[in-house]
Image 1: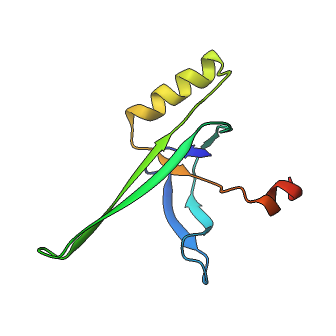
Image 2 (image 1 turned 30 degrees about the horizontal axis):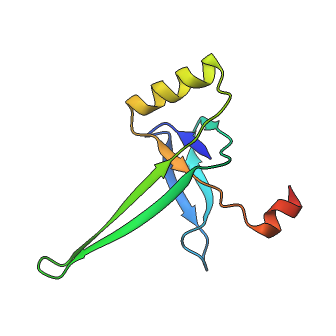
Image 3 (image 1 turned 135 degrees about the vertical axis):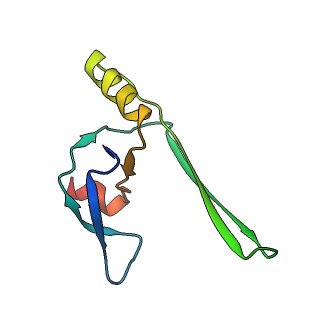
Amino acid sequence: MYFVNYGDITSVTYDATDTDVIDAVAGSPSAYKIDVRGSSTYTESIQSSRENGTTAFEQVLELSLKKLTKEDHNTIKLLSFGRPHVLLRIITEIDSYLD
């Protein structure tokens, strides 16, 4: 998982066939990589309203971060004060053979 400061990414290019996949980002982002293992979860709920014709996506990321250094803790704290972009790489069974 990568955290990027809000505003550091000026544009995003998505995959032509799978528009949920990011191909490239533009700008000068400083990304902070954090390894996520174990009991961390990601859920997404979709709420639609027929009355006013809107749809909203609620995304919840619960992280279990172990063995953080003092510097890691401080970086996460400072990022949480802003509005960071969170980029996730979904690991599939095939990916685990490639790493």
